[in-house]
Image (tube, rainbow, N blue to C red; front, side, top):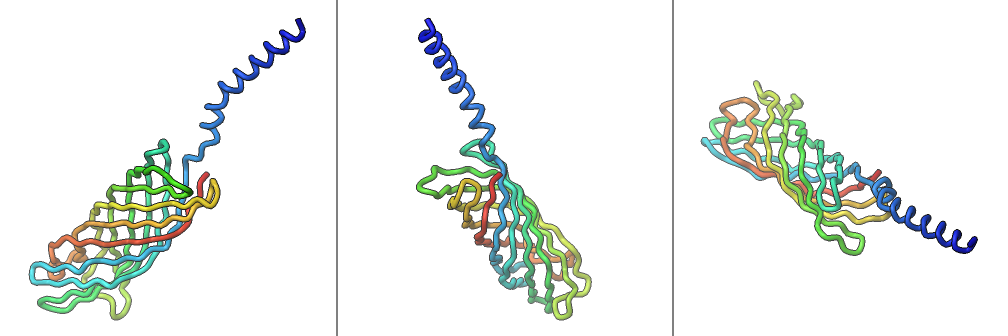
Length: 205
């Protein structure tokens, strides 16, 4: 009788452990992650309305927070920064150096992983904010802060060192109207594109 009771107790314990395993897995799953990346910022020149806009290449950084909804889908918010100079040719010459702030949100689709790599694609939107520095040689009279709505797309991959730390390589593209700093004389009324390759680290928690 004692042996039967032991068997019953063992079976009951096994069933209890099995029932608790999914809950434990959910509790231990890491859904949040933050990323820190160094970036390049390469913007296509634009022209229109008799005005040509030449943009310098620049480097900056990108900070992000990603929430993993499930193993295939995530939501992400990002802030980025760089500084470049727009040089305008047309009826006159204008040169505006500005701090460029990026604030965007994206949906992220995670593709099938292999080895330690987790590839993904993303798409979303946000704003690029151009804030003139006012520095000597990089300012134009009357140039003011301007924000431009932007469509964002991209792809990347994470290489996992551990469960909580990964290396990330990524490419983002921004499509938006070229800035004119609220000056009609600098308005090209043209769409432009910025390519933003980046690399950095991801921390999951």
